[in-house]
Image 1 (spheres, rainbow, N blue to C red):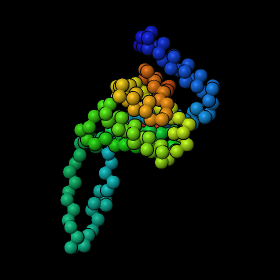
Image 2: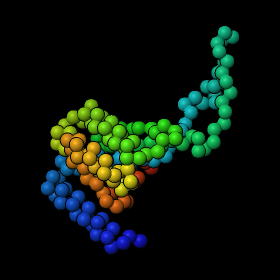
Image 3: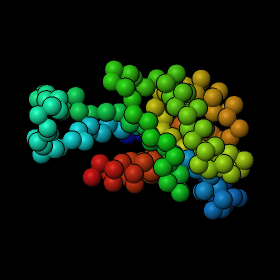
Image 4: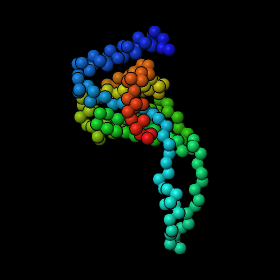
Length: 175
């Protein structure tokens, strides 16, 4: 159901990706950092059995846990990763929406995470792969990416075959 413009754009992005792979090979693939957002279920770390544990008579009494609704137990999480593993996991506070400003702050945290975990990646240039959600394609996001001493590789239109988070990371993470 894509328009001709979308098909041409997707084909152009794919050809650009392939040409960069042919020029850089494995080095190009190792420079790719990909990320995306998803909803995850919030799990209470304390089980019902743990909450029923006996305490000393002087220990504070435990309050009964209120039953949570399903929507109250879901959190938005942003995950960035590369070929070696997870670089940054950021949980959104309730009531916060992902807009350009929030995404730019996340990109700055990503840069610090790369500096701490993969210092050599910044010197060789980061290739950022993300989908075409509005916060990802905003002008301000592009400015933050271009000022980050690394390259951004923006997919103009959502391409399922170029969104590894949806297929490799999130399905395993949600299991």
